[in-house]
Amino acid sequence: MIVAPGGGFRTLMMSYEGVDVAKRLNQMGVDAFVLKYRTVYVDPNASPAAGGRGPATTGPQAGQNLREIAGADGQQAVRTVRQHAAEFGVLSNRIGIIGYSAGGAVVLSTVYGPPDSRPDFAAPIYAAGANSNPPPEGAPPLFIAVAADDQLVGYQGSLDLFGAWRKAKLPAELHVFQTGQHGFVKKGGGADHYLDRLEEWLKLNGWLARKLN
Image 1 (cartoon, rainbow, N blue to C red):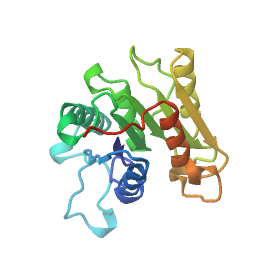
Image 2: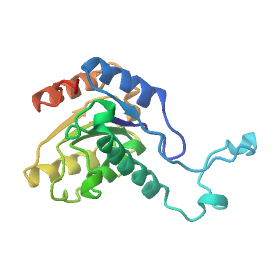
Image 3: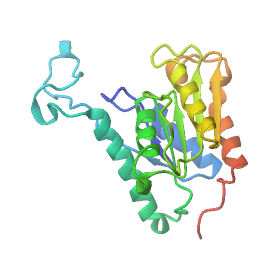
Image 4: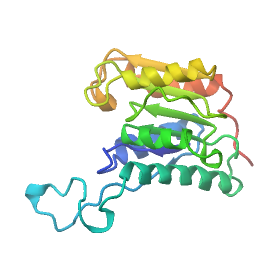
């Protein structure tokens, strides 16, 4: 399973939404690949006041659509893992992807992308850009999770995404947790255990199989 951390296309939450998730997937028996996709260029010489963040209007990324670039990296990640599945000791027809916030948008780029870059299953978590666009032919099953009190992307996009999959009679599971806020940083609710729900979903659909010998 490929893990796409969030970070607003400006940075990557490589621990909380990357390595930590990969370790939990490993506990489930899932091989994990943390994706370092392209983000907004950060000038190392930027002043402290500028914070070293923000969209680049000059330089190598001027005029580029960072969402499209990040999405292309997600698509290539799926291709790469599938093409090297035997080398990695995984099954080429069990390639999944999970992503958070901006990383959720990367996930959706793979889901709606060309067939050769499409995962076998996907988990957009409080995904940026989730909407009601009809799924493409051959779209994968989805596990969707968001908090009702998400203050950044809200929950409506995740609801619309789920509705689009169900309208197309495609498998999808949706969890809208009462509390958790964006990033599931507010603890004490069901969002604390969303990876347990993901594990149940993976088992239900038969994706927790042994890897190749």
